[in-house]
Image (tube, rainbow, N blue to C red; front, top):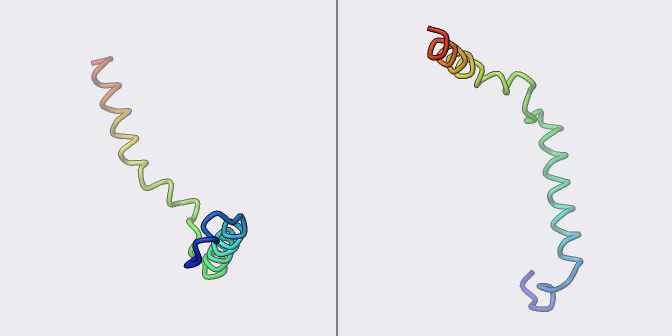
Length: 59
């Protein structure tokens, strides 16, 4: 992308998209995809927030 003419070329978008797709594919093959359990890391905070709200309104 050093050429000034490439700056306005749509081919640059395709090249960048191909790089991104290759990186995503490599991450999947390497096993670096987020697991389903990663979303549970906020569960203790969620439980605490619900408990505090319940205590605040119904105590």
